[in-house]
Length: 203
Image 1: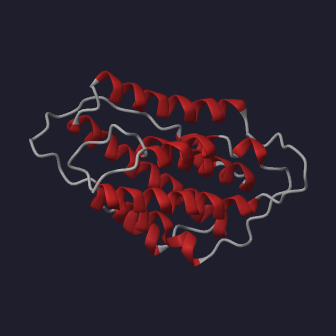
Image 2 (image 1 turned 30 degrees about the vertical axis):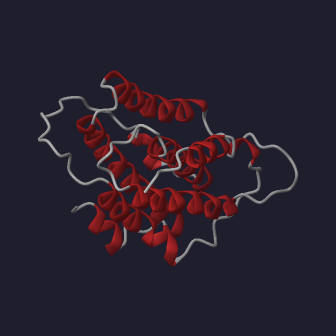
């Protein structure tokens, strides 16, 4: 199957422009069953997309510290903004034309479609009243997420997008979906994580 890398790349550009258009009025009361399962299904698609590399990989000592404080926000709107920004970066990263040849491209596109669909779904938390918002969130939070994903991009680039490098990045994507699940569960109920979330932490 011939991959169409142009379409996901174009979508990633559009998605990275998406948040500045969101407005100040906020409501996330529509989150439901599909939200509880989003991260779980995404992890399954990621696993099916990225089988182990054909050759054994050396152990990677590099780490990418995620800004964990963003997962402890007590503001529901900020949690939604953080979730959207993580998903935008994941979409942009996984739509790269440099993904390894042994990855299953059709499954990868299914994963990208799911991420894109959920971004549009989560946008409904922001009610359009025709005005621009200051809702990019705290500048430090915005910069810390950008720095995290920039370090991953630099790691890929420095290692010439090798299959082993991508396998290490796959683990980062897996962790990001778990972070997204933490934020979604908090937005839904502010209660302890559900059974579906606990399953994520045992994978």
